Length: 252
Image (cartoon, rainbow, N blue to C red; front, side, top):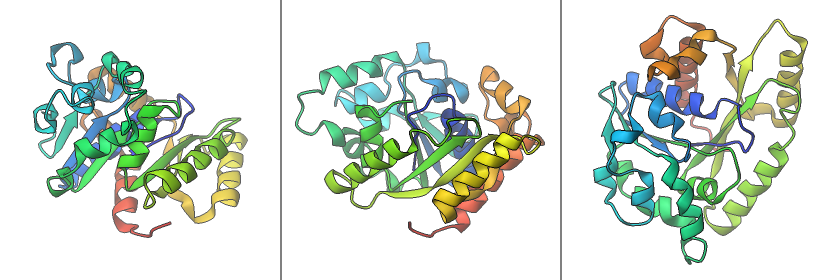
């Protein structure tokens, strides 16, 4: 499952890290793939980017075997393929490569036998890296920030999904739309939730991720929210989302 939205600051990495951790804590063997050159998902699970020999970049250009990229996290059932800034070079180096859109799919092939869930964190753009993630994934989860302009740009993302389906991955489905930074006290949050429900109906998850200070603090400690403050509203919401996804096998 890839976590995608070309808008920045909508909670993609927060969702990737904490949903992966919630699956892992539910005793599901889970792999978190950091497909963003910023490498925030990597630091968000406590991995020091400077001390790594190989990252996703070496795997995608064929310089390293995927097995050598997989790292441990604090949660035994959660493994990580890290990323850092050199991943930006993938776009440039692969520009004329005939199979540039399927490099991640090729690299991850076979890992589905090892893991029950593979979560891919995408960069905040509709770049070649995002295309690779959408081509490799079975499903896409879209985090939607409860703020003005939230729905703007979603049309563009859904057009990209259509192109991916027709060109590279006919089985790609939308797992759902996740409302993030939800504040039930504000009219704006309620309005975005209503509009999302009206446009996308059954695609909107029942779980909503609230604005939560603890959720914002956790990455600076290199911990998923469930290891930082398991009793917080943010931790409870990601556990609820994991349960909702595990119970929701509907294909859209």
